[in-house]
Each structure stands twice: as structure tokens, then as C-alpha cells.
Amino acid sequence: MKALELREKTTEELTELEGQLRDKLVRLSVAKATQRATNFAQFGALRRDIARIKTVLHERAHGIAGEA
Image 1: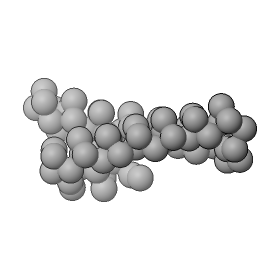
Image 2 (image 1 turned 180 degrees about the vertical axis):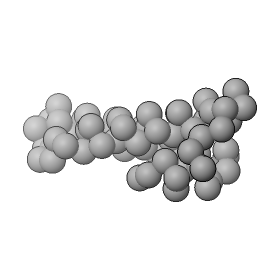
Image 3 (image 1 turned 135 degrees about the horizontal axis):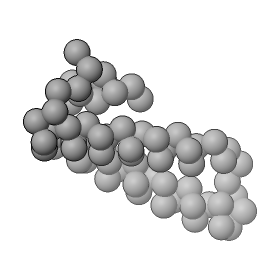
Image 4 (image 1 turned 90 degrees about the vertical axis):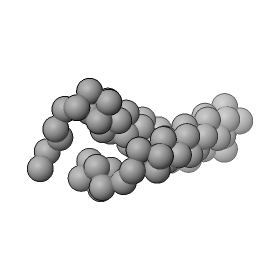
């Protein structure tokens, strides 16, 4: 997910998406603990997506303009 795509979404959509991604990360962690996970690259991708969402929300909260 690209930052430009995230900046087009509303704040409510971003917080909902962050919650969904965190839930997915927890389910993936459980799958890893029970040795059912096969694609460990998803962990990093999910964490990066969550970080991008948090960055966009932080920019909006502090009035910082992101990339045009």
C-alpha cells in the first residue's frame, strides 16, 4: 500500500484500516506460534503498512503537509 493511496482516505478509514491490519498481524503471529504460517515476509509488510498509516495520521494531526 502506497502513502499516496493512504493520503486519499479519510481519517476514519485510516483508523479502521489500521485496526484491521493489527488484527491480521495478531492472527499471523498466532499462526506462526502454532507453526502454521508459511509466508514470513507478511510480517514486515504488515508492520510497514501500519507505520505508513500512523505517519499519515501524525501528519494530519500536526498539520504537516505530506508529499503532493
